[in-house]
Structure formats: C-alpha cells, structure tokens
Image 1 (tube, rainbow, N blue to C red):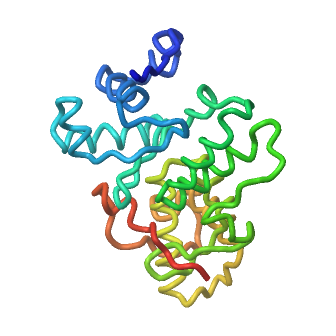
Image 2 (cartoon, one colour; image 1 turned 135 degrees about the vertical axis):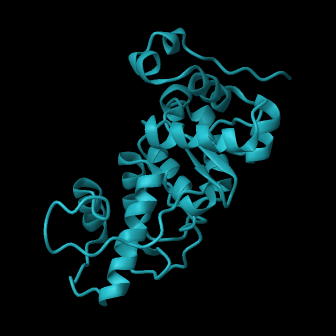
Length: 242
C-alpha cells in the first residue's frame, strides 16, 4: 500500500518559511516531512548518506542544511550517533487523541534509540488528551526523577523531562554547547560554585551566553575547543545512569 504525507498549503504562506527559509531550507524541510523513512511518531532512522542520495545533495551540504534546520530554524533535531531525525512539530499535525493510534504510536516511541528524543516524544505522548497511564521511557521501568549524566566528565545531571524541556527551548547545538561548557567548568574548578540545579545552570548559561561573551564577572573561563562537526555536536548521548 502506498504511503502519503499531507503538507498544509499554509506551508507556502507561513511567515517563518517565507521570510527566513532559503529555497534549499524549504526543500530539505519538505524532505524531512515526506521522505519514505517517516513514521507515525515523527522520529525515524536515516543516515546522512541516505539523505544525500535521496535529495541529490552531497553529504557536506546535507550536514550544513540539517544544522540550519536545527540551530537556525529550530524545526528538526538530528542525532548522529543513532542516525535518527526528529521533526519537532510533527505531533501537532499527525497525532490525534484517537485510541486507534495509541498503541502503534507508543510502539514507535519505544523503538527510538536516542534517549533525548525518546524523552521528548514521551513528554508529548503524555500530553495527548485521554492518556490515563503516562509513558515513562526506557522500557517503562525507570522512575521519572531518575537523573542521567551528561558531558564528558558527567557533572551535569538531568531527568528525561528536564532534558526534553531544554531540547524544546533551545537548539540541540546550543544545548550541547551549554552542557559541554558547564561540565568542563565544573571539572576545572571541582565545582567550586556548588552547582546542584543543573537544569537552572544550563538555562543561565544559555541566557547569559557563558563561554561566548563575558558580560559579567565571576563566570568560569570559556571551555576549550569549539564543536563544529555534526558528530561532535551530539557526543553527549549514551551517558550512564546515576
């Protein structure tokens, strides 16, 4: 049976698309929403090379365009380690409160490999009308307040809900930058600032642009080594549990 993906005609008159998207942005975004790998949950596995083969772009151009859709337009996320692409607003237009989609939707969310993406989708699933039993990610056995380590040194600790909220509020590139900066700062000083609420610290890092501008005294020194490669942008995934 053939598969069809409906795209609203409003796509072509949306002010964000009209004013901010280049023709390349529009093309690759339409691909993200209509390609044969898409599924009900809006998070699917597809490699950079596959995207290149199917769109006609080379791999460097694909990485550049995905970074634009992620960091500049905030409409998708891509996890290089798991080769999964998440369309952020997919749930708004493709999920309903119907019981008919509850089981297949839940099955697809459980198959998502990227922990952050799965947490984001679980949060959206739990917000659906009529959900009596919330879905808790990671085989339905983990408690909602379990925190996971992020960053190379594991100082940053976040629950799935906290990570999903941060991922929703800022681009994944910026979240990765903040996690790396805060984690390396805590490691360099032995956490002399006594940071405990890592969710709040990351939000302050994003808001005050720590590591980018020194607008106020007393902040840690900028972390060494800017992340520019797509693989590096997503290096925090796979952190061990506490």
